[in-house]
Amino acid sequence: MTTIEQLSALSQILAQGNLHSLFQPIVSLSERRILGYEALTRGPSNSPLHSPIPLFAVARQSGRLSELELACRESACRRFSELQLPGKLFLNISPESLLEASHQPGRTLQLLKTYGIAPSQVVIELTEQAPIDDFSLLHTALHHYRAMGFSIALDDLGAGYSSLRLWSELRPDYVKIDRHFIDGIHQDAVKREFVGSILQMAKASRAQVIAEGIELPEELAVLAEMGVDLLQGYLLGRPQEQPAHEAQQLLPLLEARPGALQDEGCDLSALLNQQPAVHAEQTIGEVLAAFRAQANLNSMAVLDEQQQPIGIVHRHSLTDALLKPFATDLLARKPISRLMSDDFLAVELEQSLQQVSRLLTSRARQRIEEDFIITHKGIYHGLGRVIDVLKLITELKIQQARHANPLTLLPGNVPIQQCLSRVLQQEREALICYVDIDNFKPFNDIYGYAKGDEVLLCLAHCLSERVDPTCDFVGHIGGDDFLLVLSSKDWRKRLHQLQEDFQGQCRRFYRPEHLQAGCFSATNRQGQRQEFGLLTLSIGVVHLHPQACAQLDASQLAELASQAKHHAKGVPGYSLHIVDTLLANNQSPNSAARAS
Ligand code: C2E
Ligand code: MG
Ligand code: MG
Image (cartoon, rainbow, N blue to C red; front, side):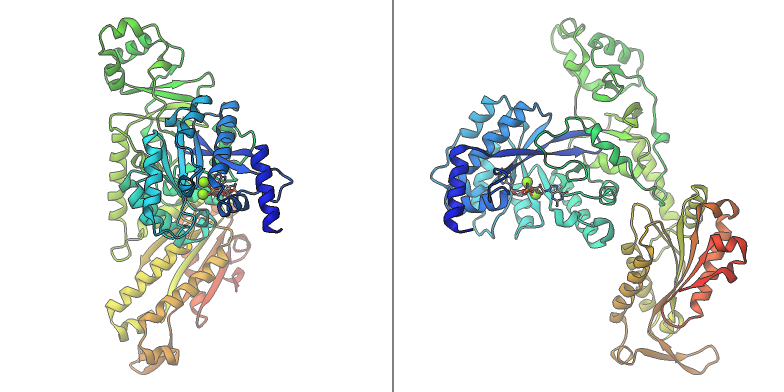
């Protein structure tokens, strides 16, 4: 397509104003509601400029960007208002358009007024489209929009040239993590590290994190586990002309989470206070009476007809509202929905303590005396107290530290036993992998214990990187013995990658002559010099099937894994020895063992 044809297609679109706005929901996991929608523009379906990328590129080249931006914004606001979409409207804006002579200041506010949208509902998404020397342009854009009462999101974090600098200079209210970091995050420890760091920086700068481009339930499970609360992607909803209004329609997917194997305090039953709730149409007078009658009531959930939470009333805010002169008389007969807050945290009963703690700390405004709501399948179940979460988390941390291996800080034998018992109790299919380093003892003799410790730390790191944190477990039995419990379907691939990672990482520990020779020599137990191969792994695997769980206890399972490891050690170099519990039931485990 020639440039002339492109320009004519653009002119036609602008003249006829036939742009379409699609809306993609952004969902809050903890609040089980739609935070808002991102407006995404499309040209006419038969036009070569249907997709926004070429559409905006042509407009940029021909100096008609601000004209196009304005047309997109007008379409987005009109449709948002016509569809009566709840929550916030996220608008993409190219900062350069502010510089064009045709830019008309004040038009956006006018548009919002026409369509009855409050500026506080609008979030402006800024992206860096090219390497920028001129930070002042984005600053100008930011001040321009903040002054109008809009919130600011930094879009595509990690994709641009200077995202971190932009973040620190612009101090956005939201940061949207680029799709690249979300794609396959369940299989990529480096991506998880990135997202973890982004979450920490967000906490420090009081920005809320949105993960973009979630396509798979596994990606969602990892993000939820890490404490990312705001989610966007095809899995939850594609950009659509008429998107869903209710998060419940999108939410069943969120419950498909494989069970965690780490001891995260199981579910939230220990936190549950079964306090009464009120319905939205009940009067402020009735709520006041309930608070008077129960001195230890901090908060009350407000429910809709389906018993789902839609708001919360805190004792302190009710008191503040009623302190005004004559307020009690004026308000007593009004519905509680007038005074409730819709900024609340609701968590599902089966979420883990760790998740709730992360969600609480990621909230911008969370007061310690404000309770959160606990639901079961979306229905109100009771309230939880922030102080109880802190207490339980502290206890759990102390317990974990007491049972951790002092070198690697991985869970030691007590949590390993607990994990095996849990797997048997849950009657689930799992791979119990006993991992041992070949030639570790002679390596220690030649290189010394300090280097030996470095090797153990290196293996601990490789193990933690190769597992799926939402469903797998890593423990350190002691010395060079580690135990993995894998539930991931791609376990074989993970074990082979583990071996490759470990061998690669270990190269930095050897002296050049040993590396070159591919072996090192040391004195063996009989006092003679002997040559040993470089460090590799022997892994004994027990393939546990649900049918076999009732016949085994945790110690027998650990013993089977240890036997499998002994078989693996009999083979020089990297080896994997698999014992299948289904076959082992009929015959002795050893004879049923399949080496691979
Ligand atoms: P963006 O703002 O980063 O928007 C997200 C893009 O990712 C959208 O592409 C969306 O359809 C896509 N997406 C969302 N979820 C998923 C997912 O799970 N998987 C995959 N593979 N993709 C997903 P789209 O609509 O083609 O827009 C592309 C870009 O065009 C946007 O990137 C934005 O920078 C720009 N754009 C779109 N509409 C406008 C607009 O009205 N004004 C301005 N200035 N830019 C716009
Ligand atoms: Mg965007
Ligand atoms: Mg984006």
